[in-house]
Image 1: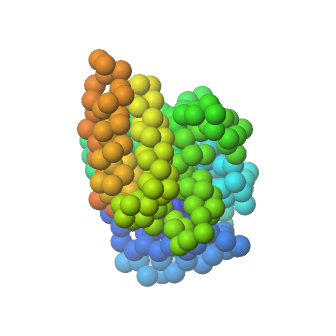
Image 2: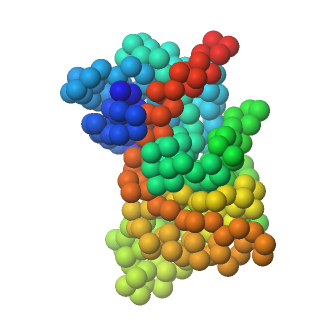
Image 3: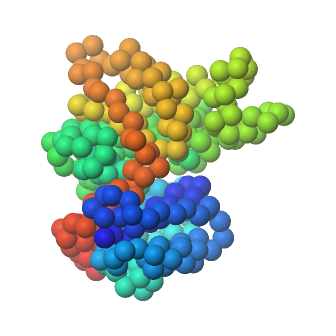
Length: 303
């Protein structure tokens, strides 16, 4: 069994999993003392599990140095983890060897291993949550690149040259338009009760023109991002995951339609899938990675 911890932008998800199958899970909101609260919650999960975990997997919402077990940069998300040795933290807190990975890559591993795209060798994932995370696998190899940046910055592709500066320093990033943090920013300017993405979709369906405009702009940003991922990586399948996908077809259907309408004319039209439990995508992937001795050997390199 594996102890898995996903340090998300708005909540920390934890679980004890058995080869990708959740045994016990929990979640705590992001706030002060994240590491201490995560460790306490994890200890309770371990105590209640039918068997002791033998390894840990940790996901963070940004660029990671996997060999060093550190979050390099996440731009306003989980800044408390910047440059913290998470492998040492897991060893000290739980006595477990650990692997650290970007959250979108972990989600992709989960879905191609035991989830909605099991067995896929060419796939891209776009996870819609606090930010927009992406990842890609080509011919069975998860893309990481020479500096662990490859594939994961799709949410920071420019989709509007006239949009405001993103917190990453680029202009008009999809995340700065259609990440949940950006949508909450725009919704906060309203004087009514439409304060989150779920309410935005409901209000748009009820005929609220302003909410519909925000929704439609977000869908175009998500769709443009998916088009760019398809042009870059030529996948057989596109996986849409993350908390916003709790809206299901209300998000997935128009994004897929946008992609099919805007892809290069000769490009393969990929299948689109939604995980059965998008909230578990990252934990499932961490379980697979933590259980793999090769992943843990890579994490120990140069330490």
